[in-house]
Length: 63
Image (cartoon, rainbow, N blue to C red; front, top):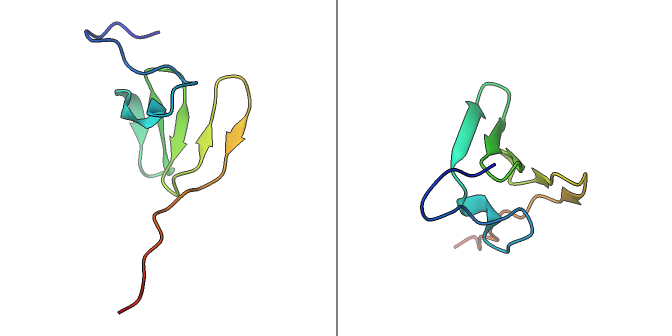
């Protein structure tokens, strides 16, 4: 799916979220990445093979 140079990380790559956005729908809370990953605003992901990656927001410590 990727036509960029250098190529975007694959959907199986640990840095898959670094792929280019090809369709953004912030009003609906999701974006489609060049590697066919659906990235949700809560940081959850739906991978092209149907696997779900749970939201993984950074942990913040209250001061």
